[in-house]
Length: 94
Image 1 (spheres, rainbow, N blue to C red):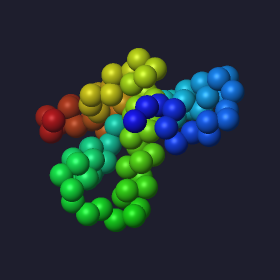
Image 2 (image 1 turned 90 degrees about the vertical axis):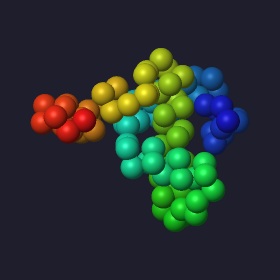
Image 3 (image 1 turned 180 degrees about the vertical axis):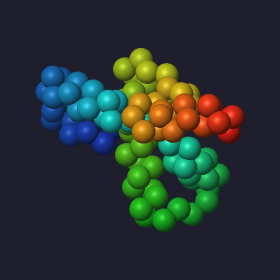
């Protein structure tokens, strides 16, 4: 799978870059979806809602990685996930 998967192949390169940049900017690390991805890789049945969320999550993660972001863990996320991870680190829950 590439970062161009699930994108209209008739898009201009400029529009493609805009879509990928938007996906990368919107992506945030999710421990729940990382766990769901492992379950899916092991052949577990996931609900349609989780599969859909996982698809969007994976596309965003791939775009973020392609744009040079480190997507290895919550400390590299943005937004509320990053704040939550920092708070957990302060409490010693990591």
